[in-house]
Image 1 (tube, rainbow, N blue to C red):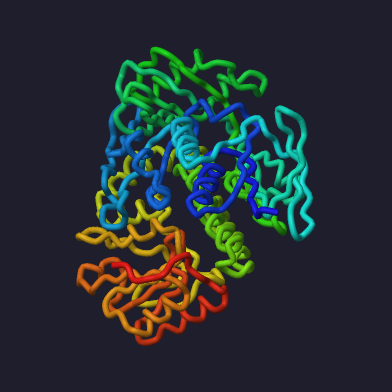
Image 2 (tube, helix red, strand yellow):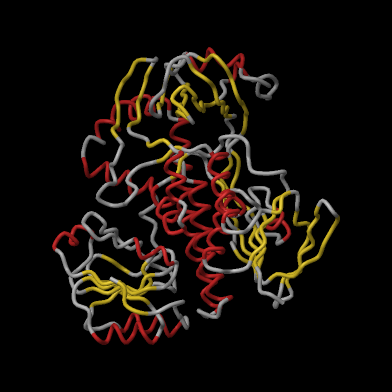
Length: 506
């Protein structure tokens, strides 16, 4: 039997997983019960860490060229402009993509589907995973197709099938958390008043968020539906009655409503992201409040983290135990993110007096300081995510530890993130390259990226004469000084890591 992966669900997480497996030459099948990609804007923020991963996958240019960079965020109170936070390139010292990108999810998904098609793969639309059985060696999957029900065997199944995941429910994995009481509205409208940047408006106990989508004349509006618009606990069926409410908070003049929906936001994390040969990815494993634009990006991070590990095991390039690190690494961040977004959500919704002062007045003043803007970028961008407690992380050199994202040093002529396009293990050397390190790399069939030391690297936390064993997803597995690479040697041995190619590069 050909060792294939079944991906159930073709949203951003499932598509990113499929593209990553494709780039690594790992057989897979991706299915989705829908007719085709989504047709509404839904999640719109794409963070820098996601763009870095897309750069590795070779699709970032198509994503960026179709999106809009957030240059500033404006604050309004009673429709009066209170403050502006300049965003633009606030992460220019930390990432090749030092901004937040706005791209409607339907456009985003179409780009991913096209990339998958160009690589010679396709989503099997109108295919739904109904049942599966994991016997320890393979997973037998029963799939409902337009032509009837078929049964196929797979090495692994990845449930990327959303918050109502069939895969999670079949595994009987608890999805602990809850549902927020307020009912939200989301509407995509056309406005006579142009909105060039994201805006946050406040009036009394109400607030409304506005984002430009596709063009500055098209706006996404998000807010809580006031009690006076609710009828017997039910949200209004259309947005007509809510127009005046939104126009009373933000400087918009709505001339057409393209799409409207009401919903309650959930906050949940599955108790486990893996059972045997079956994994949960994205919303199937965690859902968060929309605060901060983190949910979709977290799911894509899950997908890339899992894809290279599955590929390594299926190709015999790593011990099967490396798959255990997927849950350990990603569930920790999902729980942390849930707590963070939960606090921010409750603050926005429940703390009227603090909200009406702290957000429109105090926060913009605080973010005038460069160090505060840098901290904001690190958090929003997700480049702060680390796996230092993972069994796949060891050692330290300078301020950089095993489990950290490889710091970016691309401000000069050489971009140290460019070799990560190989999606393979590699050794990075900053300073002196010794024969011992070269031999270590050759034995494990790893490429070596060597940068002679430059004082400008100190600002990234990298220390002179440091060496790093870098994972296929751009995280450091082991860090050491050149005179004692034991942490790297031990990591390679413990997980039986072998690269796909060898030789010196750089």
